[in-house]
Length: 334
Length: 236
Image 1 (spheres, chains in turn yellow, orange):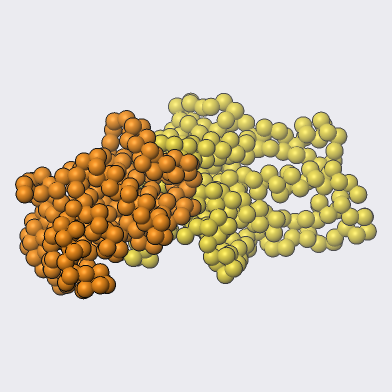
Image 2 (image 1 turned 90 degrees about the vertical axis):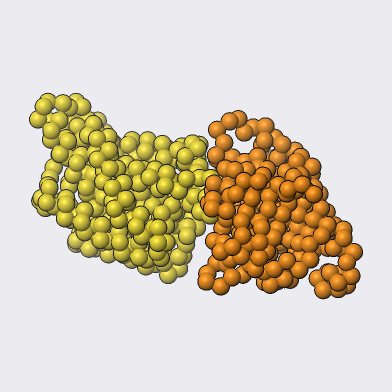
């Protein structure tokens, strides 16, 4: 038995990737839950909003690279995020003015807004494919590892290596900063409080003189920021393909619903539940088990519960289980 | 009698094509309490909402300090110094008591701490629970939060839709005492009440509505003494 090597293999292949993926999903799910609690519909266009924002982050990154601007060991994309947020916020505000506000004025049922957002999703999806194409784009630069596997092996003398990618570290730090800023904004600022009031009781918010148009605008701007950050981090850590972002919609919604739609803390908790479930179920445990079990007990197969091609099924199953047994989610959403 | 501070004059209208109010008049003088009573479905709350601009009037007008505000939206009326406490969902349940009060003062850009202290003096229990979520409070305390939120705008008129609905008799008496205190500071109060007897007892003027029209209008004491009102509406 070799517990240390098993632990390092677990950290390297399950825990750290799960943590990074969870953080990316969490920021995505926060955007979904924000739109749900303030604008009161499930925004199916969120995945493609992430794709749209990431596309701009990539284009601006390429431009920066071409004129020689870089962040040294950090990915240049971090520098492009603020610009991409501005463009995406403009896009969302424009969409709201052109599309959503028309239906909001008629006070349509939430399900109609969901269908409307599905239409917006297809348009955005098409736009992204027209501009940047359907292929995979890679835009990560800077140094590849904060901690390389070989260095770790040399330092610890273990057979297993532990690697921390720069993008993983960047993901975690950015996620923590983003979430902290979002919560500070919602809890402490006048505008943030008015958004919570609007979400809590729209009629009373109007009676208190809160301007609904302003609440809606600020919501879209924050949603744009969250979408760009989540999308860019995901793209840096993995890769960018428009179709993958469309597929991300499912784990993101699963995360928001598991945590309880409308609850920001729930969105974060739900994101990690979904991320770790996906990684645990699709990881081939042969290596970890090989260290833990006596030699002749070591499994012959990969001991992988589900092929990675089916990882979408994990989100789906979680979604169904939660909706059947705990429809309000872990943190009592709506 | 001088012109009333706020008057909804000969109001006719309803939510849809059917009129609920038929030439109904409701008024309140400065620093006084006016109470609307009547049987269920008489249009009490509707009359109040009409004064606040929450339904379209087909006839009549609403005057505040002599100014015609019939066409103003409820939000614009808040800015003019009117405050409204709805009967239900009248607090932000997920926010703390203090945040509820802050939201009441959303339109104000000046220092709100004085007003907040006044409200904590009026309702000491709210000060003790200021950092607690308003949704966790008891029914009576929630009503205090609701009235406190409305007072944060420093209104000239406070409109209350059944402030004592669903609270115990002891809490009800206390709420009425607080309402009298508020009126003494010069704020006019217009309220709809189910507990007609107690409400008329503290009211300067009372309006008995039946089927959307004025049936009796007099001072609170005179209505209480009127044998017909007693027999029909106060249970003898």
